[in-house]
Length: 177
Image (cartoon, rainbow, N blue to C red; front, side, top):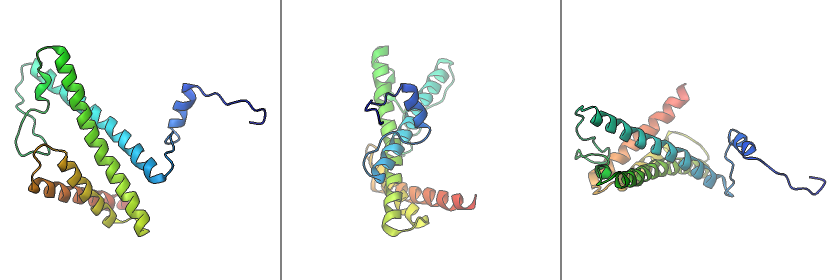
């Protein structure tokens, strides 16, 4: 800017830049990666939670019997959003927003943590391989299990093993295709 004028950008300019990459710089590639992944996954988690509740509401309105939806982090089957049938629609909406926020946070936590761990392990070890994925998946799985109500030792171990297995498989299969 040789004439000393500040550059003005419109909202449309900002949206176009989103296609090029992350619009914010938090000062370190690790922080940028965690924040970017957290926000993307949290959005996906919120969409999934609202879509699931819309489906269950539609099925219930149609008079079809679905039964309780099992919780991934719990061995006990229970309704996902038990407070949604509040005294009025305001209470139901508040419960939907609260539960959607919780679930989107869990998705964002898992994705941000996994992404940050794989990046950190790659930087520390100097290589990106299945071992980084296994460790990051195990730690992320255990952390996700800890967000569940009444998490038992067995659930934490099972989630850690599942996280390690899924992330290792994804890493190995990504190299094949």
